[in-house]
Image: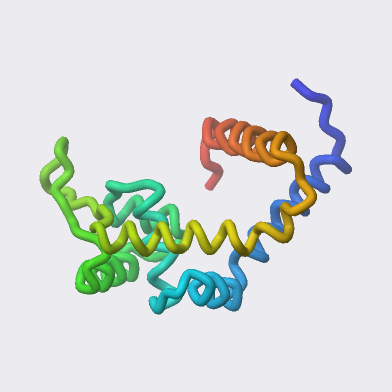
Length: 154
């Protein structure tokens, strides 16, 4: 195991807190939606992206990942369904559980969001080498995967 100083870990944690705060600014969502050429309630699009990344996914699991109340997420998934962006299908193992999956229209929307993210991140990454970017992705994934193996603290 690497010898991690309190100062180094505090720097890592500070960078992560800054990243999460930046990503959670409501104005950034508006910029992303505008860049993607989409009109969607700002409360809905993170759920749409969550369904894209983790789906098929049940509403309870989606609510946990989004840090939102189950009943609120259930209503929002119903709204996404009424917009034709997701559909609910029975879980193949437990037919009592319905899971949300993207429709073709929902996939078009998440593809547009992904492309917009790349365009918006390009200036920040303009001077990075391909190896630097791949290293960031590899190390961040390794770190997150390591954290995911740890028990959740109450």
